[in-house]
Length: 451
Image (cartoon, rainbow, N blue to C red; front, side, top):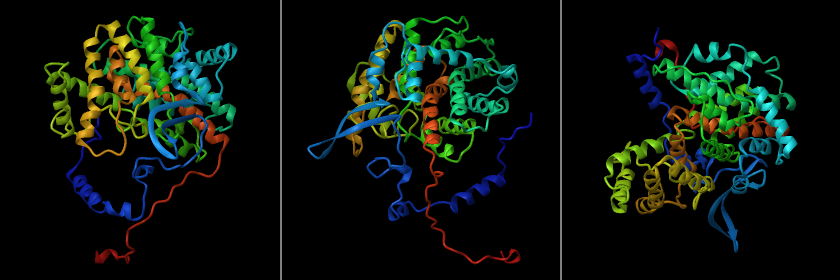
């Protein structure tokens, strides 16, 4: 097999020229008041659009002053805490959440039944798709498999370029139904061809929820406990949407505004989520905790833990990045509501799995890390655990492979991406095209024989 990854000395030399001639003086960003990352210096996002799909609250105005508060997250005006709290008995909530995000209302029994029927029907992949697309070109990166699967669906869709609302809704519902299969089957192919393990391809069960089907299709015996499926379902709800300003959802809006097809839009959003600054944070948290467990002798010794966290911030240990992964968020300050919801269920699952000592370490670091960060860093807002702090631990306890952590994020977020794509189409305005200021001086052209 011909390799395409070899970097020749000539390319290294050209790369140096690329860097030297493309480096921009950092002071110019301040000079021209450029909002790097579309954020003000205090971290507040630049307003670039309107949405009624979800809302993030991190501060409130009290007596005319902006005051930081416990974070709140709303889907279509409903507090995420209320959505999770009211999932009684054996009811699963991800599908209800997807309905809410797409259609703006909580479904009644008949409406939910109709949606579940559509999702069950749409979980049927085109003939030989798994064999020809997933198994014949396995990848070590499941997000790559997911992107390729989405783009390949274009060739199977006779109305791929039709951007009418009914057709786009049909495409979105199919993607919501198929994302779990693309992800799990992609992992099974990787696990077989790369790791040498037995290949299992289970068909989804029509009566199962999204969370149940993920566990059923992933595990060799197809079996799982209800508490496992329930907690995975909650994880999907918490990751389904998070405002229009996160990188992948903004990508969704930007690419949709060009008038292109659904598969191109979702593949672009997946490309954004694949980036480690966006979708891979929970993997970093798990790796960080493995390092902590190896280097701290007493998991209950607060002084030992604080000393190690301080060394982590100084870039001396772990990956020497100077970061405590899972702590802090671009918007939330006092608390991330998703982390607060998660933490209660994490404790229950740790008891079920016999890993309460490990949970205790997580809880202790959740409390101590903000203290250490405030001592070591000049920060403009509070620091608290974000949803990634616990999600990797949950997935680990559910025996989900690390390779699927980011795809699981995508399996949930496709609901939000779909809602935002539809919202952009329904309110279609101008193509999104921000301004960039050129800082290069104009030069006289040099003829070829004089260079």
